[in-house]
Length: 328
Image 1 (tube, one colour):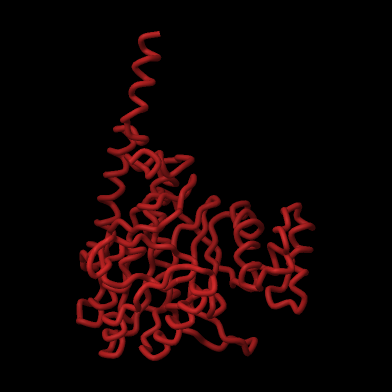
Image 2: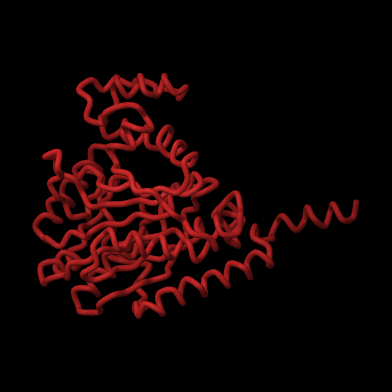
């Protein structure tokens, strides 16, 4: 009885990650840094607070009550690209990022990531480097397949993402015993894409082993370069890596055109306004860096908490961080 009472009291203050796991995590963190040091990639630091927030309609940010307002960064991306334009060369950063209303087994609204940029490196080589890092941390070869986004829909969801009748997406759900959203006729094509990706494609990926999804529609990659594929359609040079039900990273062949980037920011803000979301100020310093001349590069952000979950065979993110948002 006394032991049970002590354990109950401990739950009022104790971390969700035990000391043994934390020590293992610190060892893995050292291996991440060593990975980049061996490749002569410079470690940098950028602010957690900024006068501008990201415009991505799918991400919600924390606004700090200050004059002028400040925003907790959802990613260090814009600051790091300013460093690229300033001539810093290959860089990486291990940092905290913040995203509002993200909770769950694989989510916390404050999380650790490693983000890095390689000047002059094509996306395919950066994917090789991602695979090398993940393999080193989890202790075994990853051997991830590479599948085009459009083929993932065709192969795993059994539907053409550009189908004329949007109700084909509802049929794809029913054929796989996935619940059809309420009022499916009100959903846009992009909303259907997101829904099928989460509830059909990602679970299917988990059954087939590690896999990169590559070449997304431009509307799904606001910061990436685009190209015309063999099918005559325009695609974005974006990739994501999925391992055991977990999305580990998001990478781009980076857009360097300032005018096009401003156009995409404007489109994001219109989408946010339509969704009833707050409108952050556009990061003019980032756009100035693009106008000055950011070098051609590829970049990627990888969730470290999720990577350490895989490496340590843990089931949820709270097992590898000390104080998740639910007990912070």
